[in-house]
Image (cartoon, rainbow, N blue to C red; front, side):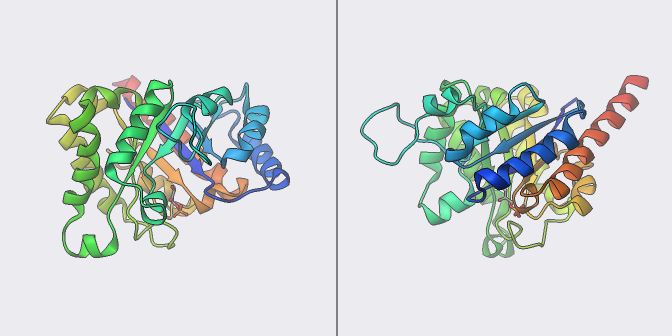
Length: 263
Ligand SMILES: O=C(CO)COP(=O)(O)O
């Protein structure tokens, strides 16, 4: 039984004042929801604020990227141990915006994925195809390649302490999410590909869906058998939209768990 997980990716949004309102709202709305896991991935300058406000709550915090190298002469970069110093337990790796705008590759994503784990954090590896790639029927080729960049280097064992996220680029920030069936199809593909290496790990790894998840569509997406929660961009920026998404995951999980326990 996989616990649902909802991760907010604030991207490059926020200020000390607006974060305070947002986090207070999320703590109030989600504080009692114990049947799923919650994380917010904030811009680096706000890690201190996130730690200060979230320590002792049921909401974890993380970063949106890291440098694979240890402390050293790398101007502008942030090392894994700097993140753990601020209590980060999660870090997003290989987001499509990093791949497209900062020329990150499968290779650098793999190195950062591994560096995050070495520092004791849980990496959230993002994968997904563009609209053109989907229209050309390349979805499985692209997502398979992105997944294999990790599997081929480190083997399936590294997935024990990691999260995978399917984020089709055509759904990110567009207001046009994948249908639950479209997302499920790719999630099942990812799980089956891992199962070829290790069936037990494949059954346990959590795979999130990201791309225009909103309160209106979260429950339908989270109900699919291979969708274990969401990676939320725009809708994670206000408590009014983020809390209902978190609660959708919580309610589903509680309901399924009770159902499973009754069997
Ligand atoms: O990129 C995303 C999360 O990482 C998804 O963004 P949106 O929810 O704004 O589509």
